[in-house]
Length: 108
Image (cartoon, rainbow, N blue to C red; front, top):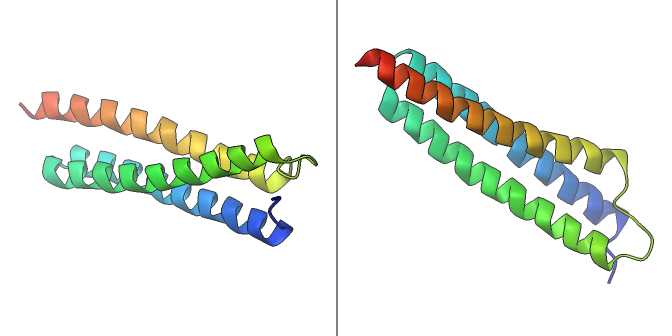
């Protein structure tokens, strides 16, 4: 069963929201690490990972819909933006983890 335009938009906005929140958490983690607050840094990474997982799951659901859709409903600008947010959140996570490790080393 194909999803409606409204359901598609809602799913895309969830993906954008979760990805954006994850990206913000990862960047916050870097700021905590810069200040030497490694427990807070790890907590921000953990929050970001939870948000990222929700975004990933929303993305997976959209991809599943695309696979079963006959009309290519998901090839819209909103989905492109949503996927961009997901990719940026993943990049921010990887970047944050590397910087936090660097700050840990410098703090020793």
